[in-house]
Amino acid sequence: MPPPTTELRFLEGRVALVTGASRGIGAAIAVQLARRGARVACVATTAERCAETVARCNALTDGAQAYGCDVASTTAAAAVVDQVVKEMGGLYVLVNNAGITRDQLLLRMSEEDFDRVVDVNLKGTWNFLKASARPLMKSSGRIVNVGSIVGLTGNAGQANYAAAKAGVVGLAQSLAKELAGRGVCVNTVAPGYIATDMTAAIDEKSAEALKTKIPLGRIGAAEDIALAVDFLVGPGGSYVTGQTIVVDGGLSLGG
Ligand code: NAP
Image 1 (tube, rainbow, N blue to C red):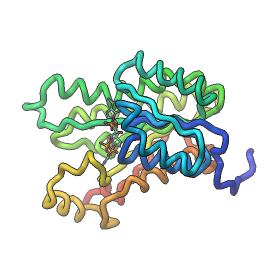
Image 2: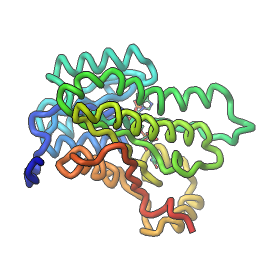
Image 3: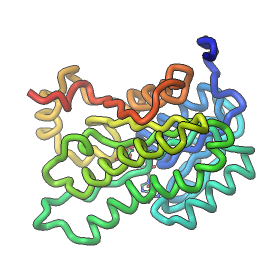
Image 4: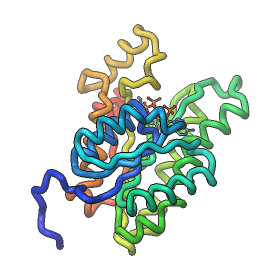
């Protein structure tokens, strides 16, 4: 058994790739991993959109780089992973965080809205898992998917998103079994209601109503999610695989 480590920069010399790193939860995760010493490959729809996150990462650990691709494209995802491995020298952490919502009740939901949400959230995760599996097996690395409590509980108006996020959990559980023999841990973090651009469209009245349903009494911050990822990719996560860690202030407890 490895000895417990008190090393704060436990990702020193390691490469971490974070999708959806331009803003919100992904940006907070990228910065937290850089705080741990990782050189972070920040991926968003375009490399330019990651400029600010890269600068924040580089202020903590040199070597962060920006990459752009549509995560829903299998070929583009594979090209980015290849480039990261070549340019940055391997891969130890993969965080599948990029995601979108296109909310609508089922009767009004278009096929295009269903497909796009599944393509970005679920297929996008598969694309990066598939492209990264070999380098991660080589490094006995860590994979964290960002799901949602909606993938565990369902939500009216989010059938597309809930289905995609439930799929992300199934992917993590299956790959946890497939990759365990190579020492790779695969987990999901399921956020509740977190203040980012994604939730900014919720009107103030609905936001206040939602807040009253959160036992811990506050809306989550992107950093709350980043610290759960930090645990999973750090020494504390070395015997955790196939799990879903809910980070929602108790929202999903209901009641
Ligand atoms: P956000 O602020 O809207 O940021 C979304 C990120 O994903 C951006 O970096 C965006 O890049 C990237 N992205 C979207 N589509 C992409 C695509 N096709 N290809 C590449 N990158 C793409 O969202 P967030 O709230 O931080 O959410 C991050 C993750 O947490 C998502 O998976 C979301 O489903 C999940 N989540 C969020 C909440 C919440 O309350 N906020 C709750 C549960 C789960 P660009 O800047 O280039 O568009």
